Image 1 (cartoon, helix red, strand yellow):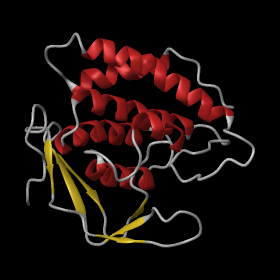
Image 2 (cartoon, helix red, strand yellow):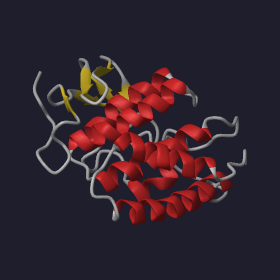
Image 3 (spheres, one colour):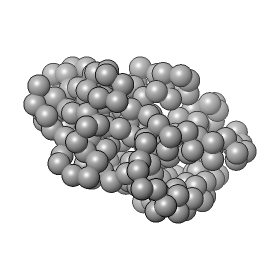
Image 4 (cartoon, one colour):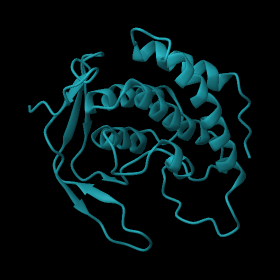
Length: 205
């Protein structure tokens, strides 16, 4: 297994990826952003002693972050979270609704972002973004959960506006808290973010 984690302040020790993912671009109606994985791609999560596998043939869009948050958190195929997003997309494919497995995958995503070279602040903001996406799956009128919706003919839906406001609000708290931390524990950070999300009403718009 080839260690594809990046050297840096936090990458070492969080885990490693199994080399470069081999992919094929897919074409279809609308913007062509989907890809297909050729061969398995794994992330070994050192923190949990577990290997997470994106299986051969997985079709993915590069991000399980809601499209409404791309301008705030990051868009597909850009940034140091790209490898983490592939493995996380497999979790989302296997567990499309919020639940224990999805939550575990979201936490893995934070550690995989760190292994990929993201700063601890970036990893926390990405975790917040995917948690918002996971929570949105609780409602039948969920929209924009997997970043697949391309246009809003009648203007931005209310759930997107709500999610953007929550992301901006909690994001400010994360930045303030992170600036005060000398050491970083991703599980503790995830607990804190989950508590902040739980303190807010989440309407089924």
